Length: 110
Image 1 (tube, rainbow, N blue to C red):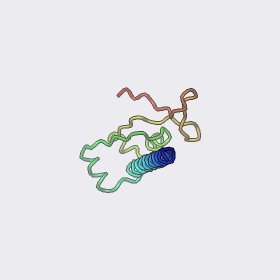
Image 2 (image 1 turned 90 degrees about the vertical axis):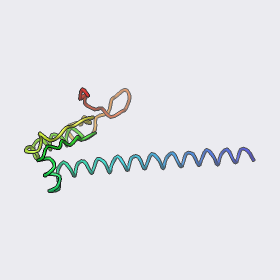
Image 3 (image 1 turned 60 degrees about the horizontal axis):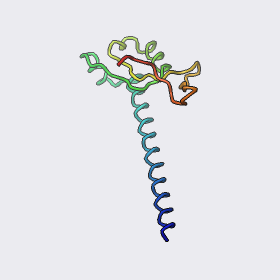
Image 4 (image 1 turned 60 degrees about the vertical axis):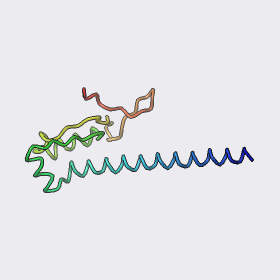
C-alpha cells in the first residue's frame, strides 16, 4: 500500500513539474514575441513615449533580431538597449556552448 502511494506521489510531482516547465517556456515565448512586436511593429503610443525619451530595454533577443532592428529601425536605435543577447549562427539559430549545452549570450558588461 505504501509503495502505491509513493508511486502516485512521484508521478503527481513529475506531472506538476513538467506542467510548470511548459508554462515557463510558454511565458518565455510570449515575452520574446511581445518584445519582437514592440521592436518591429511599435504602436503610435509606443513611438510617442520613445520620442519623449523612454528607453526600452530588450532582454534575451537573438543577435540576428538585433542586427535586423539596427537596419530596419535605425531612427529608433537611440531609444533601445539590449541585454542578455543570445548569440546566433549564420542561420539565425541560437549557439550553444559545446561543453555545457547552454545557450550562449553576449557579455554586455552589466
